[in-house]
Length: 220
Image 1: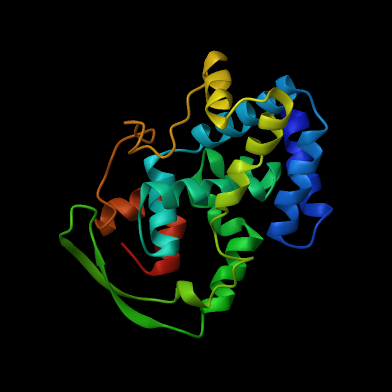
Image 2: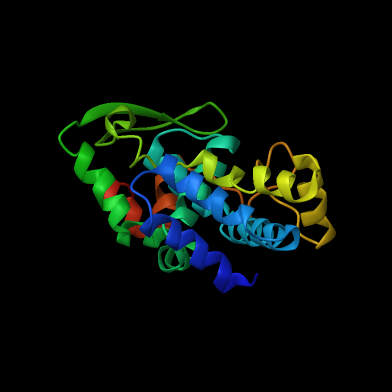
């Protein structure tokens, strides 16, 4: 399976189903019909794509939109970005500030725009950084819209076990044998996002790195 085949399956899973649960089931069913090598291919391409977009600027986007930061949460956010399809992913993978162009993100803002509240934002080192009014209330986002998709990452596990009789650790070994290592969750694997680490609570730096997102939130 090449990268085109990977994206075709991801995008077809959205077209063929009506919700995330059904989408995961559809992908598992499709993968169960493939060879073990092709299942590993799918996992490799998923890992390659997620790694490509794993940057500190993207982490800042995740941290700002969702209102919190965590290694696991960032991984699930990346799964969600991949689930949006190739065009959406390509738009933001190398330029996270274009996240505002995605209709799915615009919908999040629409869902929460009537629920402004004051929020104190803290830097990742635990120190107070800024205080601002935000229009994001995570609890008001329906599950199908929430910008995380944990289960998408696990769709290869059962098909691989059926095809090989091996546990899921064998899948990870097979992916690494191809020379691909996941950066997620980066705290677990002692990896770091690409680029320079920076203080997300520094409004001037935020505006320099992510000007469009900064304008949306009234920063800088």
